[in-house]
Image (cartoon, rainbow, N blue to C red; front, side):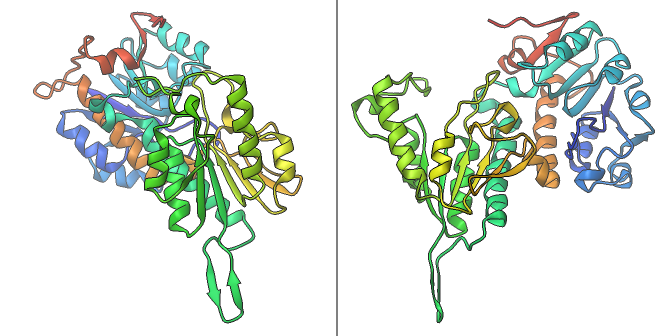
Length: 373
């Protein structure tokens, strides 16, 4: 059975879906692996590295896809690539199913079985396949590093014969995987870190990393989380109190990192223009939600701008700015997922459609997109 790894066609995508390490593992499953030439160049992986791991190199996507039973990418499949797919081929990638419905329909029309890695269920058994977590972890780290490089002052307190340099103040808004890594990274760099989130349970996580939790701690907030761990809608009165607290907090910050994303919807505005106007000149905002409109109304996707004396960084692919590590983690995630689909003894496809991981991730099957409630 043949597995194909394609070169990314999305603009500025530097990651690759397989590494020499993962190819060696695929070989142990009995798979023949073909990699499109140049697929790993931006991640510092040469064709020679892939050949040494046991892969063959194809001159273009069409040649790589010829007869391929499994196709791996980082981001979606182009129209040209879809046209070259073998009927019934399995495709696994970040397919952006909320926004790229036409691409999913095009894949379905080819007879492909398409899996969107974004849709993997958040269960313990799927943790080793969770691409959103592995990539968000790197995004949180890189957000702090980029902010520190742009910020015109040092991050830690420094006591010198010439005087003391005060530590930078960092506010992280949203305490998911990216937010937690941002808190940890900023603390390692010596900053004074605070964080906010709508879920009460995150308070303990923030404090365990040495951060200060920022929220209006009334009875409504203490009961603002469902038994499943999701945030409950808050009253207008509470939202007003929380907004006032955040506005007052932001005035004192040097760096703000926003991470709020809602799948398939425009990112919520967390930092208003009025708040930005109160920030100190030279402050930095890193908006991890830039691809979905941004957590500030001023964010511009894939641009670094300065407004009201504040630098706003709107990179849409922060993991791609760490292409070597991001590719390594993503490739391991994909290997663990594909391992579910292949019979270990025969090396043939053996998809268990009763597996909740498989059911959760599939977006195209039997010639049609998979409808979800």
